[in-house]
Amino acid sequence: MQLRIVDDIVQTIGIIHGLCRVIARQDSDLSKQMKRAINSLGLNSGEGLSARGGNRTVRLESAMASGREVIFGLRIAGAAGYLDSERVAREVDTLDRIVATLYKLAYRPR
Image 1 (cartoon, rainbow, N blue to C red):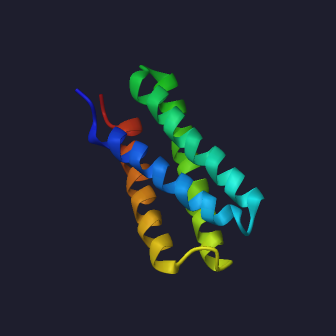
Image 2: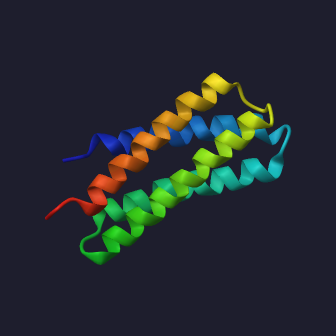
Image 3: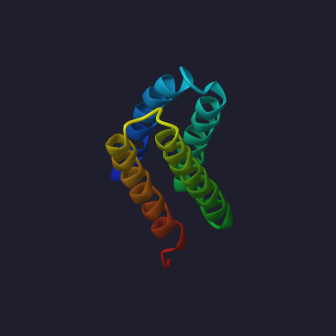
């Protein structure tokens, strides 16, 4: 069984990479950091969702931290005028939902 969140994460990674191309025109450092963080969210989620025990929680916590980093990157890009505020709000909401879902999966009773 595949969790729907996996597809949501992959789709969001593609969207953020596209936004990073826009951001890179104005701020290549912010774009690079956001790409590293969104890739970390995806890779750590994948590892955490397939792991058992304590390693699962550690990987999902790392994925959540990376997701929060991307959220702040988007907010910074919006504040700097690199991205439209509505687009920022939409992607922040999506990432916030992903982080919340990963939290539930990391700490659900077993």
